Amino acid sequence: MKKIEAIIRPEKFQLLRSELSSIGIGGLTITEAAGTGKQKGQTGVFRGNTFQIQLLPKLKVEMVVDDLQVDEIVDIIINTCSTGNIGDGKIFIHPIEEIIRIRTKERGVEAVR
Image: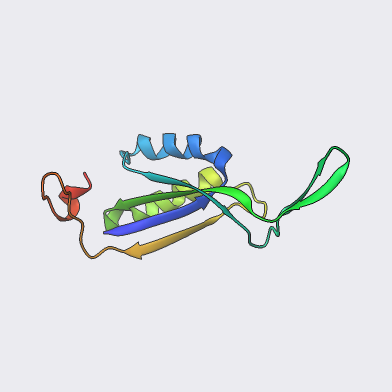
């Protein structure tokens, strides 16, 4: 099993959720995040004054999936969330040693279905 973490633009989330749902991925954890990378923030103007926005809003989407689903999910994330501009985000893939559903005590793949 693998844990996929994707840092994405917030405006791309609904489309991503729909695409993941269409292949049976319903279990997601979403965290509001803020960060900076090559984008280096933005310059804003408020009442005639300019200011720097150092951390830009992002969403972190996390899911644990079977190893066989990883490539398909990564393709969906890239195709759905890419604008071709700096700040589209990153995808991190981590191995998962064990999963246990607290309520039923199920372990492994059964715990994420």
